[in-house]
Image 1 (tube, rainbow, N blue to C red):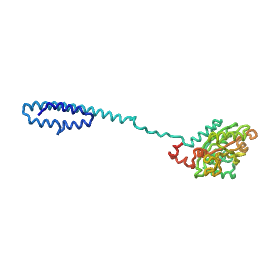
Image 2 (cartoon, protein in one colour):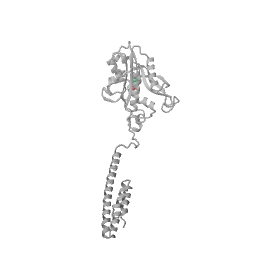
Image 3 (cartoon, helix red, strand yellow):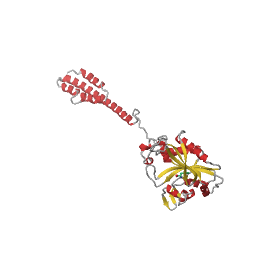
Amino acid sequence: MDISGLREKIENEISSIRNIEDLKRIRVSVLGRKGTFTDYIDKLKTLDKELRREAGKTINEVKSWAEERLGELERRFEEIEKKKREQASLIDITMPGKKPLFGKKHPLTQTLEEIIRIFGSLGFAVAEGPDIEAEYYNFEALNIPSDHPARDMQDTFYIRPGVVLRTHTSPVQIRVMESQLPPVKIIAPGCVYRCDNDISHTPMFHQVEGLMVDKNVRFSDLKGILSIFIHEMFGPDTPLRFRPSYFPFTEPSAEVDIGCVICAGKGCRVCKDTGWLEILGSGMVHPQVFRNVGYDQEEITGFAFGMGVERIAMIRYGIDDIRQFYYNDIRFLSQF
Ligand code: PHE
C-alpha cells in the first residue's frame, strides 16, 4: 500500500471546497464510513507489523489534520451564512419598493376649499352657524312664514317644534347681520339637511352661502362677483347666464346657469337637453330681511347667493350620482 499520496490527496480535496455543500460532500467522502480513511485503514491489515505502525501513524496524523481543517471550514461557512441571514433580514435595497398609500382630501373638501379660496381672494371672510337651527332663523327671519308655500321647496327635518336641521345655509346670513353692522362680506359653508334621497339628492349635503351688504351694493356687483367665481371655478371661457327666479329672502332673484360642461351646450341627458346647468341661487337681499335684523334698508343694500357643493363637484369632476361622495369607496375617492 502506498501511503505517500494520502496527505496530498486529502489536501487537494479540502482545498477544492468552496461552500457548505462542498464541505458536506467532501467530509463524507473523506471521513465517512466508506470514505478515504476507512479505505486506507482497511488496507493496513495487508501490511506487516513494522510498516503497519508507520502507516497507521501517518493516517492518524492526516486524519486529525483533516478533521481540524474541516471543522475550521465549517465554522467559517456558518459565520458567512449567519451574516447573510442577518443582512437578508435587514433591508434589501435591490427589492422593488412598496408604494405607500397616501391619503387624499375628499373631493368635496377639495371643491369646498377651492370655493373658499376664490371668495377669499375677493375679500369674503368665512362665517359659520349651527346645523341644528331655530325654525325662526331657518324660515321666518328669511321672510318664509309658516304658511308660506316656499316651505314646501325644502323638506324639513324637525328635531322638535320650533327646532329644525337647517335646510340651507341662509340662516347664517341672519346670525351674522344680527351680530354685526354693515359692511358685511361673508361666505358661510356648511352641512344642510333635507328629507330627500335619490341619484341627485342626499339627506345631508353641503352649501356655501354668500352675503355682501354695504352702501350702494348693486345687482351689477352680484353679477360681477359671481361671474369671477364661475370663471375661476370652471374656466375663463365658461358661458353663464342669470335667469330670473324666486326666493322669499331676495328680490329680485336670479338663478345662475353655466353652459353644460358635458355637451358644451349642444344638449344631453345631464342638462336635460337645455344646454345649461343650474349651479346657484342668488338675488338682492329682501328689505324685509334687513328689517328683521334691524338694518336700515334705506341706507344699505346687499346681495346673497347660495350653492350646493356636491353639485359644483359633480359638474367639476363629471360625476353623475351624488351618492358616490358618501359610499367611501376608496377606488372612487382615490381618483381625485
Ligand atoms: N338658500 C337657497 C337654497 O337653499 C339658495 C339661496 C341663497 C338663494 C341665497 C338666494 C340667496 O335654495
